[in-house]
Length: 66
Image (tube, rainbow, N blue to C red; front, side):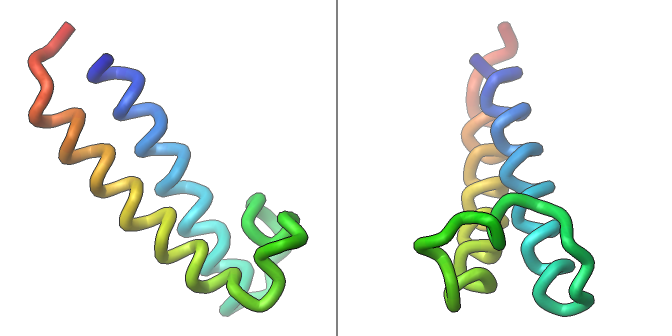
């Protein structure tokens, strides 16, 4: 379970960073900008993914290994 939380946290972290990079540099990568209902809210969604990533990392850290 700990490894699953870490993997999900890593994926959320990568997608959050990718969304912010897309918004500020116009590089076209990541999934946040491709989701239609998030039009106009990409920055908020990316920041929410970053917060989710850190919450998942904290939850993984609190779990026992195994």
